[in-house]
Length: 476
Image (tube, helix red, strand yellow):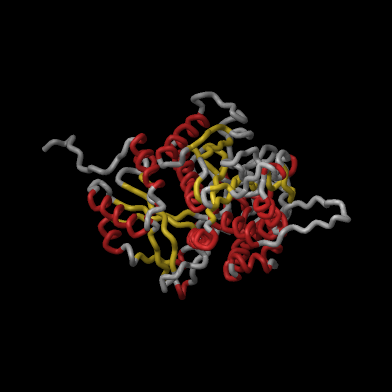
């Protein structure tokens, strides 16, 4: 017997081929869903080297969940996939636990084997209730449904891209072990400043390579302003795919960091005294292939449609703040001493404004919402931004009074109160989600002092929604 003979023959695709395959799948996403399902079913049946299909979804607070299904089982049972929703924080109650998974075949991604393991593909799913209706607290499904209705009714498409910042800290599971070890920076460089082969640069290179292979179409990758901080920018996409990209981006970063004995954290402010991390969301609307936010003769190059969109967001900024800044720690970032976008205003130049107008042309004109934190649920955040920009009440200014500078809430408790008492939030998110989301955010708030103070508290790290689990939560 040949002891060197490979016992396993799982799919491992070179990065160059992966990028071609993933960009092709992206370009095919507009096909009829039934045709797409038929094509991908045929591929999966033919490709013998795939051992499992990873289905993924996001809960109400933004945690990313993945389930691996045996390929044959999935293909036989794709229309009847169920899971226990009561085990997912923010989903169903124990007495109504069963929920369903609906495969979104257009979202398939082919994976780098060195990051995810060989023989796998990943597909996003939407969550349905027992009666096959879109589940009210699954905001990927809610966003998808809203975007489809918007296009059917007005022929409007929404495009977005996010600039997601994070920190690289020493050691594996650094967040879970924060009480014992605190965070340790792995680099003291700053903006664009790190040696070619230092740990931060190696991490950025490896993560960016994987993202390009997954069809992100990265534009630039670099250290950020603060030491040990990183940002990798990927290109514009339709709003749903942009959110999928955010979740996969964070997953890739965490996995790459883990493999290098480090932790990629998306806490907005893991260190005091230096800049925090944001997730600037760039957004625009398109109709009949034209950017409706652009007007060469408009103020700052924006159309009336764009200015109305901005006005509505500014008017409702305090109410929607909790969906964009969803953790205790995120309010440390809204500190004006560190370029924080906490001012409820719009500006083409002032980076302290929550909305900025980048320089653009007919193709690239957009608005940049800078107050969004990287630990927010991207689907909930984009859903809230889009519906507010299209359906909110415009900001009305009193011409006889001088403008008063308004700022966003500086702590989560105030943000929760504004969110809970807002009729507008109840209308766009549904009262059930409004109450449930506020309740979970209050649980986290109650585990940290109300005054943020000058030191990062253990509770705001350990009970952070992207970190906490049953073991940690029950230690409280």
